[in-house]
Amino acid sequence: MDSVEFSRGGVFVNGVRLVDLVREAELPFAMQEGREWPEDFGLEESPEGLAGAYVGLISSYYWPSRHFVGEPKDEPLGIREDGETMLLVCSGCSMAECWSLLARVEVMDGTVRWSGFRKSHGDWDLSAVGPFAFSHSQYEQALRWSVIA
Image 1 (cartoon, helix red, strand yellow):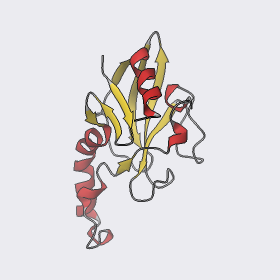
Image 2: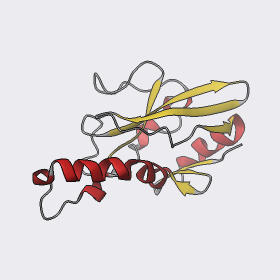
Image 3: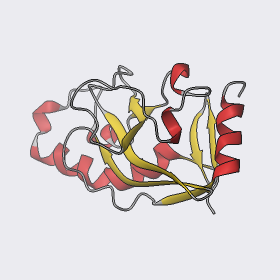
Image 4: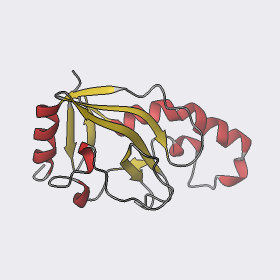
């Protein structure tokens, strides 16, 4: 079983920040976009900065919200597909509409499973991220601890 932690420092899977896991999968796509559209990157930006450019959600998405246990909060129209949950948002503006990380969150038979990771815009292949399976009891305890962590 995988382990999860929710805190102000981010979401951690097996002790590694989820942002770092996603960054590794996104980096080749970010570099390709940088080569295809170099004019889109100013002096402060680099294509590498696009990869893993996420932060955690605001506190209302955490316990006692049921957002991370199969009952996602309403996100802006067009962000998520049925069965998906928003896990992280854009690090630049913290808005879901700009850039968010989504995954299928399934709660079943004592486990919580995250799979099918994707970013809300574009077609970058994130199949290298996950799937992750968490013990339901460890998962719920991590959510409860997120309130004070």
